[in-house]
Length: 551
Ligand code: AMP
Image 1 (spheres, rainbow, N blue to C red):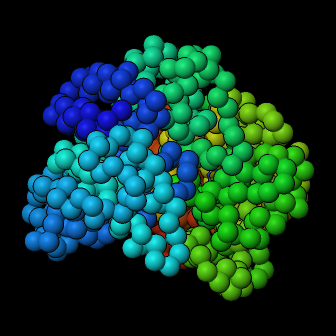
Image 2: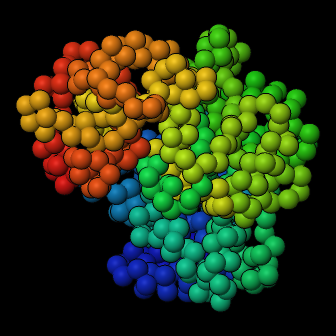
């Protein structure tokens, strides 16, 4: 396809604002793209490489301005181009203002006929060569090649070349547009296109396969070891939501590190960041761990955490320093050690597992690795979830993830299948008015504490019970503190003189007939004793009413 024809259609698309019309125009473009469909499907989004490739052109705005200036002739400097871009706001529109081609014969194209029209394929292969230039003098070589390209552009072509080079296409074509245009152009089901995109991350490949081999060709596309897919993402959510939506909840530590996708082909390891950048070289100890531990080819999802000398997690900023490190990796490794915690398995030993339920994928992960696998507890008991959260926080982790144990792995999706538990927005300071003696190992301690709000002077109404988030040591201390205040005893249950105030976290306040205040707390957790408060300063029923009304 002629690059000029591509530019003309891109102009039409840019001039259109209705989404459906844009899809139709992109569909028409795909229908005439011939051998260049692969490239056109990327160029139209301002991409030169498939999303899964870490390669970049490594051309900054300044180098691009310089190339434009050179092609525009002696009277134009890179500074002139830069100030025009500042004034106009778009590098493409500025590139289209100049009259290129006057510099014929100066271009770096040895032997190429400069007067012939550019094709999409030529632009792509020039840009690929340009991306491959590395090492000393590479910026000059890139500049020469880019100048050569601009020099062959008419204004409209220059507009899109500049935009593609700087990944600023801005014609209103997003990933969804390309997906729908592929579906319409080649009459294939949108679900098949979507799935194929998820496993390949390559719009060009998917469009070409849709055209050549139809739905069955799309279905034959699978994950490939070494080709990263987008990470599945999480929304914020509550334990209450999770238990109500799924019944059983898969609960896991939320590690405070950086996401890593591990690809092992049975021989070598590649590691990719959340943005699908190749981070293999900066993380040699993770590579060693995977090589030593995995026995079968696999694609795993996990988090890389920075740890101190005792193996305790360090803040997340420490890990970023390692990710960015290109030189002196060994030195960086001495400063900050990292370790991988795997929590999902997308592919194992020739089998794609994206559609398998999380619980099965995790079980498979357990068979692949015998250490550094997250513990996945499946439970419907909010108290157990609270205990897992307290343990995770005690161990220095960020919190917990709640996942639907039946859910498939959906690359790139930020759905409701994975929830990161929202931190509490509010806490309440509540008076302890009763308790229950524990059982078994905890029989000599008061265990479950009845909590009340202040309803008036010396008047308290119950609002819930808290039993979770309390360590054995704290239970012993609380028993010592509260036992002298026991007012009456009835079997295991005791009434306590209002004197001690607990700070309590919760997810939600609901109206409830169970407690005398008329309200109940969802997912209450003990956070500590408010030593500085007595019952007169505890939270009031009025405040609870306001919070329940969402004020
Ligand atoms: P956030 O970055 O706050 O949106 O939280 C989501 C991120 O938590 C994910 O992208 C992961 O990098 C990270 N994470 C830590 N532990 C887990 C886990 N067990 N499951 C999924 N994601 C996790």
